[in-house]
Length: 93
Image (tube, rainbow, N blue to C red; front, side, top):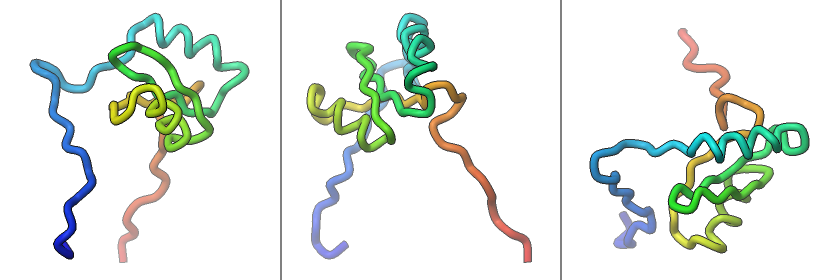
């Protein structure tokens, strides 16, 4: 790889767990924002349960990293079941 060191972070799983989900209180706070912020991305820092909102994943992450540098975030699209959607697929020939 060109002799360069990779800058990707290796995430180690938490002991005894997979992906942590936000608490019901955080989800309730996001529900209140649905009218004014629908469609925007919420980045949730799982340790503090703090929410950072941006127009896309990158903007929300950068806002979160200002306060929690290098941390991982849980992402939700406000008012929708998923952050991204897959439209399409492989075409048969």
